[in-house]
Length: 151
Length: 239
Image (tube, each protein chain N blue to C red):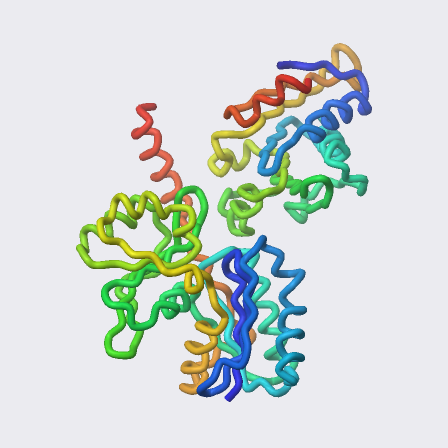
């Protein structure tokens, strides 16, 4: 499915809906160019999980952890040169846990992403305005069918 | 000689104090990985109940891996700190050796299996020769199917131990006739088991070096992962 948002707060609202319904062990991949709003979407997911902490992109720490209704692992693998690097921090232990994992720039570590996951692609639609975003959401695996209901 | 053993390589967080001929005390929590939160409290509580101080320890033993990456780092960091602070030696013991030692003097092959995620296990094959634990394979990270192949090829009587059996018991049982499984009280990483192996090493002056010691992660290489993926695609008829 595809959504058009006209402001940061509309993008965050979509994230909130996803975070509000997320289940333990969910893996959410978010891809899109720099400045497209990946981290804003993640902020929404965090709010939906009941996390009110300030969310920043873990570009240098690779992963940030937050406690909410479920624990959230927020990855940003933009800086990764080789999937081995992220595997070496114990990536599998994070994503195969009871937490919700959000992975920005997941395309860079495609080999490590399990088949079953939610895939979100976000892009600017500059022709329609500076703050307009096109958000495509798809998923693999029955466990994510609940997405149909919430969006 | 009093040894404090710590094992945080699996879901279990455990610590134990061992004297030469006696296990003085042991704590095991086999519930949710929360090692960084509870480990120091566990050690403190164990020592207090034994009326001992950390300075009374003559050395330390820690699980060096394979196992949970985060868990191994927690254990290594804790033991390095304790060793440096008390100026007492420490030694790393393979988590697999320690699990195999849980089943001391079992006849036939002892096979510890630890969950390595994505259908893989950390494993190795052992036998007891007289009173000595002898490892008969490399430390391996392989799929459960590969492990079954390995054991059936060897045609040995085998006893499994470790948290990997929780996940893979049914498939191991049906694919390996006569396979046995450790009873629950032995099917968990025990710091006492680790500490005993560690004491032997420390008595042999085989301490590890504070500056160079690092966990033994045992990972599949990128090439192995790609090969696995290809095999899986072929199995699923995607080629």
